[in-house]
Structure formats: C-alpha cells, structure tokens
Image 1 (cartoon, rainbow over the protein chains, first blue to last red):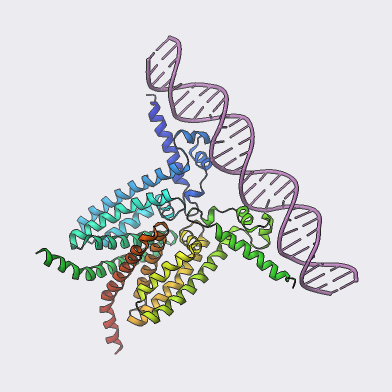
Image 2: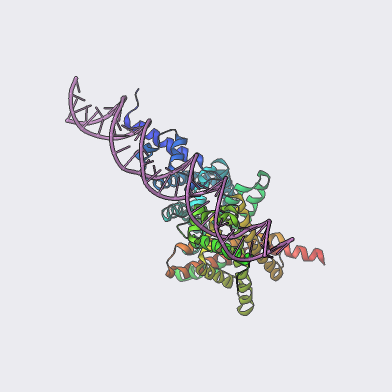
Length: 211
Length: 211
DNA sequence: CAAATAGGTATACAAATGTACGCTCAAATA
DNA sequence: TATTTGAGCGTACATTTGTATACCTATTTG
C-alpha cells in the first residue's frame, strides 16, 4: 500500500496548489504571495517548490485553469437550473453569486488577475471568461436568433456586469447581498431588452433577404 | 528668490507623487512598488519619504485623489462637448477613451485598486467613480425623467462598461481601438434603450398619480 | 539484487526592503 | 542677532526574499 512515486508527487503538488489558494483573500492578492510563503503554508521546503513548478507564474496559471474548471462546472449547473425553472437571467446571476459565496478564493484570483500586471494572467482569465460569453451568446442567438456579432456584444456586457456585481458582493454585508443581486438582474434585463429592440430591424432585414 | 520652506517641501512632495505615478505601468501595480523604489525614482533619500507621507498607503490614497481630480476635469470637458455636438453616449465613451490614451498611469491605478487588496483603496476609487455615476444619473433623470433609483442603476451599468472597455483598450493594438470603442457604445445604447422600455410603464404611473 | 532516478531537505548567500537613529544646515522665529 | 525648527541625508540593522549547491533515501529500472 506504499504510494507510487507519481502519486506522491501529485499529492505534494496539490498541497502547493491548495496552500496558494488558501492564502488568497480580500486582503491578499496572488502577486503579493511569495514562494516561501506558499511552501510554508504547504508544509514543505522552499526548494521543493521547483520540483513541481518553474516559478510562481506557472503556479498562478495553473490556479487560473483550476478556477476555470470550477466556473464551467458552475455553468453546467446553471444550465440545468434554467431548464428546470426558466428565467435565464435570474438563474444565471443567482448561481454566480452563490459560487462567489461558496468559493471566494477562486474568485479573488480571477477578479484581480483579470486586470493584473501579467499579460499571461490577463489572457488566461480572459480565456476563461470567453467560455461564459460564447456560451451565453449561443443561447441568445438560438432563442432570439440575432446576428452573431450582436449576440456576442450583448453577452459580453452581461458577463462583465455579473462579474462586477460579484466583486461588489465581496465587500458587502450579507443583508445587502440580495439588493445587489437584484440590481445586477435589472441591469441585465435592460441589456436584453435594449438589444432586442436594436436587433429587431436587422433581424427582419436578414430574414427577408434570406427568403 | 530663495524658495520658502513650505514651497520647497511641496516641490519634493510632487517629486514623490510624480515618481510613483511614473513607475505605474501595465506591468507594474502600485502595490508592487516599494518605498525605496519610489524615492530612488524621485531622486531623494529613502528616509525623506516619511517627511511627506506616513507610509505607502497614504501616498497611494493621495494618488487616487489626484486621479479623481483628473477624471472630474475630463467629465467637465465631456459635458462641454455634449452641449456642442449632442450624442451623450458617443461623446462620453470617446472622451473617456482619449483620457486613457493620454494619461494611462492614472488609469492603471484606478483600474487595479478598484479591485485591489486594500479596503481603503477600493473605497477611494469607488468614491471617485460615484461622482461619474451620480452625474450621469442626474443627466438621465433630467432628460428622460425616470425614477431616481432606475437612473442610478442604469448609470452604474454604463460606467462599469466604459471602464471595462478602457481596461481592454490597454492591451489592444491602436487599430483595434476604434472597434472596441464602437462595441462599448453599442453596449451603452442597449442599456439606454432597455432602461427606457422598462421605466416607461412606471413613469406614466407616476405622472398620472401626480396629476 | 544492484544501479539509477528523482522527490524532498538543509544550508547558505546575495539582494532588497522598511525604518530607527543621529546628523547637517538653511529657513523661520523670537 | 541668537535660537529653534524641520527637511533631507547617511549609516546601520534585522528581516525576507529567490535560488544555487549538495545531500539523503525510497522508488523505479535494468
């Protein structure tokens, strides 16, 4: 029952990843973490870090990827809920807010590195958000059959606003959380409505030229 | 023609402020600056820093305040332009994008500290953004006479989207900048349109109960 | 079973940081 | 004019950092 070398290594790797994630908070950004700090928290020697990651940047990108996975799981859950209860906007926003409450550490990372100092990080976070945006745009396009470009612009605005609401949620008392959620929902409804009006003209143009 | 003591002190203070601002870039956040680094850039001794600021946080908050002043100047300019050429949305977005091109250092600061690790910083940036939001909400309320709460929610969404477009602009080639601006304008139009539809019902309710 | 491999550690060092202490000397005050 | 004040500097020190080098030892390989 001795663990294989690969298994043991993976285990330590996870120690590092979890330690880094644990250290993230509203008062602590990833870029402010030192290598030694992470290894200390993980309970290993500083040098052991290098057996798993080239440097802190590589670990960071790994964390962003992990965050992306968590986000996509969330997305799947939201889709399920939408099928069950209808109301895309309401369900999406609420699911996202629940996610932030449940795993804030991941959100700290994504929120900050999205506008951080490392281009690699910014790109990585942006890539994760694109999954959301594309998926949402698809949904919009299917149910409303807008032009693709319009749907994407709309989806992007929505994701940004929800993300922003999440950021605000971190600083607010639980009592205000509901209000905040409602605000985001209202904003998304504005967009949905507005985009609908704007695309209506072009949509009919398209269908008549298609016909 | 010898400088008074107070004048000299103010001069050095500016050296520090300007040095810090100069060090900010897409690759360098305020929180990553060291006190020594700033004084080195300013051309003074490390210890002299303390004659002007308690610590780096105090300097940072000063910078945010300065940034706020710059923003409000910009806002005034935008208002003037709107009077001249009409089209609130188009003019506002373009003015803001010009600002980011012209003084990106201030924007680096606001962008990052808005979601940074210091509550004091987050509050400071939020306060600066509120000026924008309130002003915009006032404008909306006056020209469209919506309920106050609705106007504010709408204004907030708009400011966030413009701010976000600014952040994206930092990473994009000058050629793509125009496209990005147009995207933001479209998003704001969605919101304006959508909010209009939504508030229409309530607006008539109000005026009939007033009459 | 013997040899090679590789995850983990201990020690060590140069670099950088925040800041305490004490000094200088020009401007302000009395 | 004599005294006080305070901005700016130089030195110093403890702390933390990333990482180079060498070593140990359990697993894997031949």
